[in-house]
Every structure is written in structure tokens, then in C-alpha cells.
Length: 369
Image (cartoon, rainbow, N blue to C red):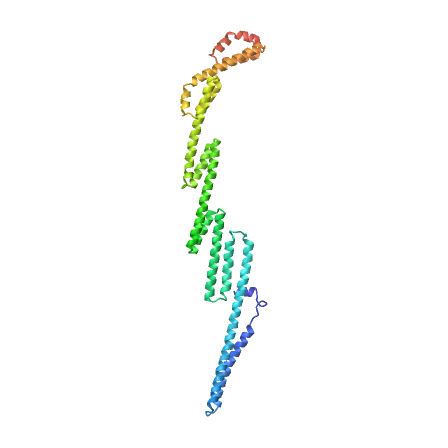
């Protein structure tokens, strides 16, 4: 307080009653001293035979003089302490204004961040007004300020719930519970928070489930399982979330089974049309991707036949290409194809036939021995 008075004088704002107080003090003391001196003098000068009326009037005068002196001194004290109270109120008002300006400059204006600013303003207002209020008024003011802070904190909690900031809302709700024994309000806000969490949980589960189903439809089983497990860990008490990983596993198994059956039917169709090489490639893919499937076990007994028929088909196509090249006079290309066939299938009937006619092929191709 002293530093504020020295750093920012209030002389131009509040008139200082210094000399008025001094004069009243002096006047009161002089009245008392003068009265005492007059009583002593009268006791020495006035003869004993003086009528009683004189002494009665003298006593009234003495009492009046003493009261006047007391009133002068009391008035001086009242002016002195009244000025101190006015200074305190003025300083509190100035501090309130400065803190309010600084707070507005530093804090963003929002529905959530304004609560702490209101608390600062309310507390400073209480300090300023308490200087001039009696005990009853101070108690009433404190109760009013408490209710204002309570309402501000409740507004902040409800704003946090509305903004889906559930962790912050829960923390502020616990603070509300400790600071204000308002069970009805706490129960009401807990109900709001629980309902918001329930709606958020259901919405989040539905959203993630849709994403998981989309990934399953695309065959991205690992990504679908990853999201399903994360959801189950986030909401372990929710039965829909807890079942989702098992649903993905079952759907993946069903999809794998359908794929195995589809590939096996495709192989049967290719074999029926004697497309041996396509049937062999599809069978090899099925056995590589699903080695433990019933279809793979069945195909293992058929792989030799598939490979043999695929090789026969390839050699026939190779033989036909050689014949075509000979027919159109491209003997060099025909000779090169024949050598490749002999190298790849040395034990085949086509290789034996080529070896029998090798000299003739070389002559036509112009290849020296």
C-alpha cells in the first residue's frame, strides 16, 4: 500500500485532510486544557459563599467544554480513518482496472477461458468493497462472489462437455465437487458428462466399424484387424467393440475359404477346357497361399499330371512354331527354336524327332557342322 502511494500520488484525486485533522486535534486539547485551567482558577478565586446556581452553571459549562473537546478529537479521528478507507478503495479500484486490462490483453476471449478471468475480477472486487463494508455485508458479498464463481465454473464444465473435451471436463468437475458441496449440481453435470461420453462412444464405435468393414471388403485384413483391436482396447466394456476383432477373424477365415474354393473351381474349369498351363499356374498359386487347405491337399496328387500335360501342350506349340517357320522359309529361326526345345525337353518325342532330322535342319539353316 505504501509503495502504491509513493509511486502514484493521489493528491489530485482525493483532498488530503491533514491540516483539518491537526486543527481539530489542537482544538479538542485546548478545550480540555482551558476547561481544566478554568476549573482550577474558579476554585481559587470564587469565594465559598457563592450561590449554588453559579456552580451548577459552571458544571454545565465544564461538561459542555469537555464534550466539545471530545467531539473535536473524535471528528479528527473519523476524518483521518475515513480518508484512509477512501484511499484503500481508490487503490483497490485502480488495481482492479489494471489487472482486468492485463488479463484481457493476455487471455483469449472464449466461452471456456473466461472463467478464470471472472474469478480474478470477482476477488479484486471483493477486496475493494470489503474495505468499506461491515461484517454482515462482507459475508453477504463473499457468498455472492462464491455463487458467481460457482456459476462460472459450471458454465466452463458444460462448455468443455459440449466441445467434446471430456478429460478436461472431468478434471474441472472434480474441482467443482471439492470446492462447492452442491450435490445436485454435481449429479446433474455428471449425468451430462456420462451421456456425452455414451453418445461419443457409440458414434466412435459405429464410425470405426464402418471403416473396418470397408477394409474387409477390400481384402485389407491386417489393417482391418489393427483398427478392430485398437477399438476393443479403447472401449473394453462395450460388447460391440470387444467382438469386432473376432468378427474380423471370422470374416477373414470365411473370405479365405471362399477364395480357396473359387480357385479350385477355376482349376477344374481350366482342366475341363484343357488349358493346362493356366490350370497349373492357378494350382501353384493356391498351394502357395493356402498350403493347409483341403483343396491344396487334393491338388498335390494331381500336380504331376498337370505339369505333364502342360509340358506336352508347350512342346506341341513349340513344334508347331518350328513347322510354321520352315513353311515360310525362315529356316534359321526354325533351327534355333528346335535347339531350344531339345535343350529344355531332351527326353521328349519332339527332341528325338529333331535329332533324327538334325542334319537336314542344319543344311536348310546354313549352319556348318
